[in-house]
Image (cartoon, rainbow, N blue to C red; front, side, top):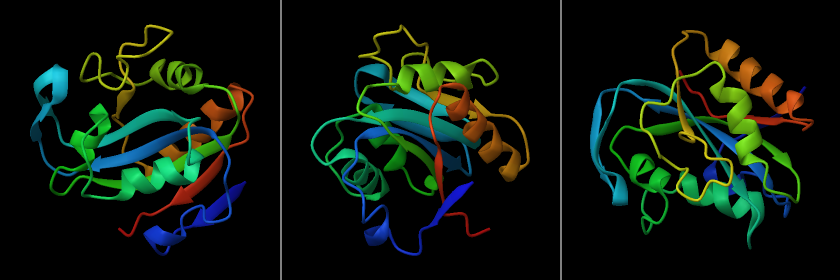
Length: 168
């Protein structure tokens, strides 16, 4: 099992220029009411969430994930609105290098066991008609969640790399 420590935002994936698929483990510590582009006003209940996306364009995985970690940015994707919310934070990242878009395949593997609280979130350009790319985890164990994501990547034929940020 590969783990990457992330002591600072600047160091995340500093040695990769790879393209690929990633899943963000996101903590929403209290109910979050926000406006999300064309989705309009939504409420994200307190909990742990998974957001799966791809990084095929310029900058690859490193550029996309560094962008997600920045609090201040132009809001372009649905996830930008959520990650810019006060107290919402990324707790871990699971990713795999691959040159094709497999976020729907990974998301499909994850969504078999998780709920989608906001229909259309992150899936407006989805080729596979995914209900949502933001999924809610209802379990309590952080290690079980990471293992679940890792196994989902493996079921999709990917080699997952886990970057844990959890401080508490």
